[in-house]
Length: 151
Length: 412
Image 1 (cartoon, rainbow over the protein chains, first blue to last red):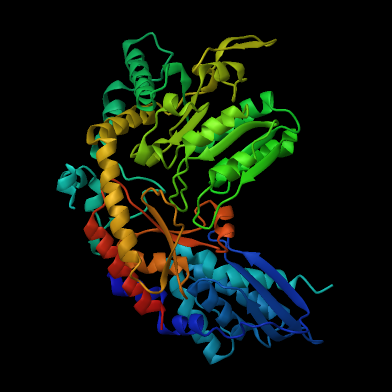
Image 2 (image 1 turned 180 degrees about the horizontal axis):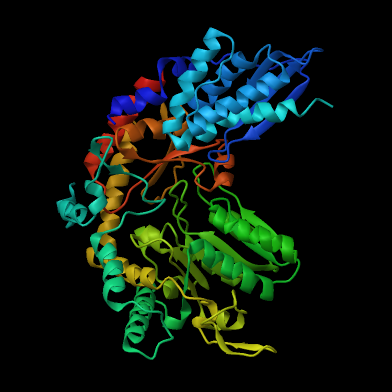
């Protein structure tokens, strides 16, 4: 692998764009569920906040934390992918995303063209096992948040 | 000043390390992670191969000549370590699996048998997790008090801050000689003197220092000194605990098993004399032998010459890194070993390391198993370059070029 291809795989333009201007990295007033976790590999911290509506769907989602480009981009595309999804749909997406990153499964279908593109862009992570925990940090925190209502 | 001016033929040195000629991503390997683990010279690789090919059997067992040869090789390795550390007796050298195991051994034996609830162990804010967690285990088991000497903003442990925490209950001061995260060299001779004056024993973690500074345990007068073979250009799986004989004699055994006993019945066992008392089970025989070869290697090159070359690399890298606007070096101790931690504005250390890898440049990124150091500087992680006896000024240039690629790729 040459230097350029070694880089292009992990840092395609879409990922860099998400890491530089992450979507939904903000405080979420009135959140109903949240979780915080740490990447044991580097000590990076992330918090995910959800607002789950009466129908059991994610009406709003946000995250906070200063992480590496991969973790930040992954969190950013995750917030877009699960917005409007039910808890079960979100858990399925998380499992599919994990399978894509760790087992080279095909990228999950999000139902939105932009979401699909973004998630599949992260599929290159499977070639960089050291970065798996970075890509999965936000998704694992989402799963914790789904099980952790406020109060 | 080039290497030759220091009486140091860097090309010859590099020729001794087979892995340095292996390309990475189609580029020459630039290995700047020697503080994590050093690469191995052919002499070390060959020593292990030759031992297995010609002299191998279990030790201290056989009446046959091959076992006696293996035992002699293992004992000779211990004698080499003794000489390298300037210890009084071979029996003061205990082979362990690693420096980590050596510290755990002291915590489990000296700590559990000789410390009482309320006794204090003093460490510093620069310690690797391996010199923190064993003392926390001991604190939770025995009710000892763990105290931590603080760092200043340069990443140094001021002697007066350390001395101020020594008191009548301090039984042990355990500190590193060189910070793995920042490269800070600690004034261990003065710290040892102060701890002894307060009636405390001293353990020095030489994992990082042994490779740059060597060690003279009698001159240091420390009670314990630990290091790992793999950081000294030797194999993995072998570490060393030096302890003063009287102390080691007063400590109970660590693990029970073969080789550490004098006599066993189902009612009771009696234990072997030093050093076997602390070496239960078949040890890392071939690794001990190869560690001896590693000590030969650095001794022949000369620790003074190695240190002079590494100082040159440190000064050159520090000055070149300082020219990168977005980069800040973490830790500005007056005395440093050839380790530099840094951060870049807007780029996470993981991403720095990843982009550098695409250029064949290997660095460490993370908390370096020293999370309290990171917390002291308010950082989750840093990027760290560390230089060994085989690195070149051209490799520093390759690092700088690769860091420019980091800026181009990730800072826009």
